[in-house]
Length: 388
Image 1 (cartoon, rainbow, N blue to C red):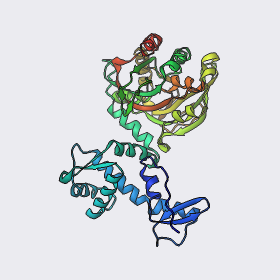
Image 2: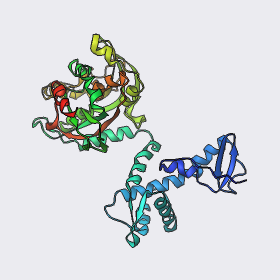
Image 3: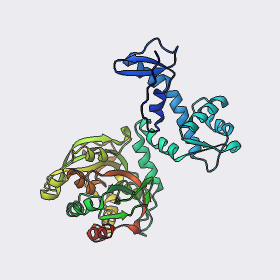
Image 4: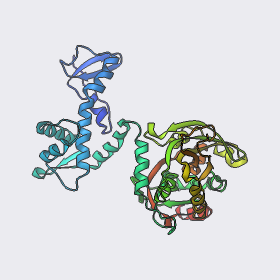
């Protein structure tokens, strides 16, 4: 007996491919479609194998085609797409490309423009963004390197772009949390003393501020890496974690996530999971805040101290602790020829809203903002009034 099974997939290629075959196999409470002669019957374990091995190649090829189209400014033909794909690791024939393009057209991810070829749609771009969860871990490290390279801030000139984190929040809820947000800055638990606000319709990176929301931007601590790199000091980001503070001083890391093994910022995880305690930190100096562990060459330690003083002057100071050459810092060992540093997390100020159960959308390393658009946190209450 053949059964037609429908399941909304919201345009996600991976979900759709697994659910659009031609005949049916039954598992308990799960009608699953598959090619007629592919398998005799599938159990739960075999379905996983089918999803990973049989369908993954097809999904990867569709994503590869979308990636080619994303880089184009005009329609291109299937022959040109085939040529460009041949430079990659996936094998494509012209017939295969034409077949997948017809499917992508039907799914609304591409649009055909006659003989001129095809272009990717907004839905196709959204599909590429959602498909990044299937990439290999470690993309956070790549994102960090990318943003360090792209920022242009010049410390002596006090101009250029810095990396920011962006949170989308209800302005009225944000107004109810002004005091604790400012205290996070005042107590030294934020990345510097600067921030900015975005109005509905404004964008930073790929983040668009929708109607009814305000963009709350704080400087990302990765900005320090970029500034140091321009001064000839390579700083490596090892991990982000929850830092226990006692009497306002760093005590130890209680949880860590290595940047080389994650595709999402560790602080986003800890904040949304309710694992932080900024309320305690700003009230009596005892709590759990976001921070990261960095390493740099031992010979650059004194230069970092000097630059750190200048960063404080321009509102970008965030070095909470600096270790000694080749010595552990908060029981975290460092390799020979290296020194450890603890940098305060940039998303910390907005975390007090999450602790009050005001859900926000936050994205670390969301984009770049001109330094001269930033203002000191003391101005925040007054400036927010125009958004209410």
